[in-house]
Image 1 (cartoon, helix red, strand yellow):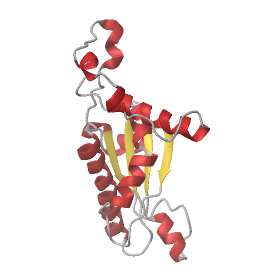
Image 2: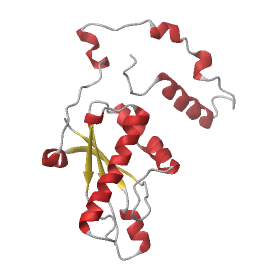
Image 3: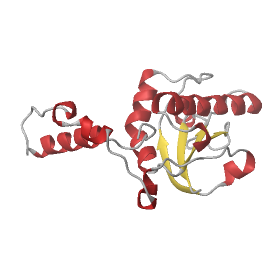
Image 4: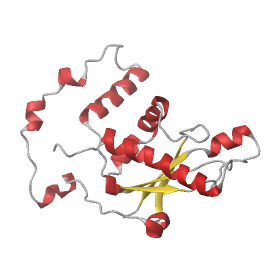
Amino acid sequence: NTLYTGVSGDDLYLQMANKYRSLGFTGSSVPTWRQIAYPYFTQNAALSGATHDAEKSKAFTKLEGEEAAEKEAIATKRVSISFRTGEYQLDENAKYIIDREFIDIAKAFGNARIRIEGNTDNVGSASSNKALSKRRAQSVANYLINEHGMDENRIIVIGNGPDKPVASNNTADGRAKNRRTDFELIRE
């Protein structure tokens, strides 16, 4: 299924190889997935019928406004993607953090929506912070869509501005913690 964006055999194999290595069950050299996999077998296999409906990707419709903001979260994952004051572009470190901290969760819960909430510190006007926080969340959404093939209708982008601080804005460290992006899995 070329549209499948969930956890792949390669991902599982690599995770288990690392786990076995850390437990001492295997030596330092483990063959790669490509060396042991036989892709012809799976490329030509097709699942059909009602018993295989779970293999289909969920079709999401666009969800915006208050309904999107107020939907109940199944789980929240605070991913500390730090932004410099006034900036919203993702650097390579931010992309690495998203890949490491969130992608596997998003793939495992492929039928849940993802709400991305951008946040700022309280430096500057409320309106400019609201716009900046939305651009931060949209940067993350664009990365998920463009690099990981996630359905854009699955993603809800929210800009909170300075309204949801996790630390005091009275210190530089606190302000840095407030310039963040939170991820939530949303019940359909």
